[in-house]
Structures are given as C-alpha cells and as structure tokens.
Image (tube, rainbow, N blue to C red):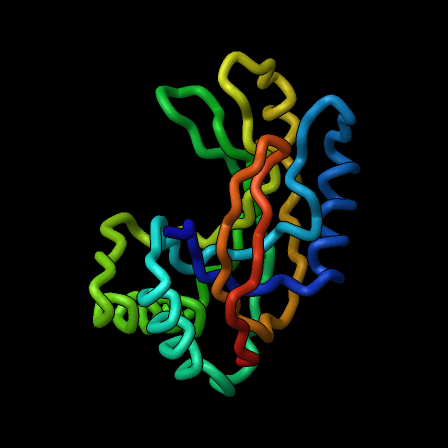
Length: 180
C-alpha cells in the first residue's frame, strides 16, 4: 500500500513570491517551514492505495490532459485550528469556477474508481507550516492582519503523488503527471 494524493503544481515563481512575503511578515529559523519545493495544491488526498488502484488512477488522470491553463491567485494567509489551537498555517487561493470545476471532475472520476467523495467543502490552500502541539503560536498573530497577497499564476500541471513517510519528514514521489 502507498499513501497517495493528487495535486496541482504551483509554479516556482509563485512559490518564491509567497515565501518572500512570508519572510517579510515573520521569518524564523526555529520553525520547520514546509520546503518550498513541496508546496502544492492538494486536489484529492487518497490515503492508502493499492498497486492496482495506482494504475487505475494514473490512467484516469490522462483524461485531464490538455484541459487548459488554470489562472489562479494566492490571496491571503490563514490558520486551521483544532480545539482552538493553531495546527496549520496556510496561504489561500482564489476559488474560481474553473478550479471548482476541476475539483469536481477529479472527485467524480475517483468516485468511479471506488474512492469516497470528500464531504467537507473544498478550501483551496497551500500548507506552509505544520504547528506541533505545545509550540509557541504567538507568531500567528503576525499573519492574521497581513495585507492581501495577490500573487497571480497559471497552474499548468496535475500530478499524482506517493507520499513516503520518513523520520525527517514526508517525501513526495511523482507517479503520473499531465499538462493541463
């Protein structure tokens, strides 16, 4: 079994601008920020996936090839909380009709392969920091009142990844990619 997910690739120019803006607000070498090369927009987390399912998903992903570039924008910072305690610092994306349509098509395609559709609403975001329990979270306030980010970009690629868990953190191994 492999842990897998499908993600939109974020161009390096947009990721670099995002991290530059993050550093302007709060830069700490003591926090374990998500590495810039791992920043992506998760469209569907699949979890444990068999080799047969990996083959089926890879084939299904080919149906998304040549759909067209997806104009998006990184808009603002936000925080997910559990029991009122910050757990994830993220950067939100504009929820365009094209992005929502792609999300629904992915959900429908994978439901046809036996994967359960997500019941929570789609909240497009890029995880930039995972906050460990018991950490000092006072720095989060620096992001709460931050100016809008307004970082436009074009999404060009959809990738099916395996997430390999290691003591040093997860490693994302591409299984299949298609150009939109």
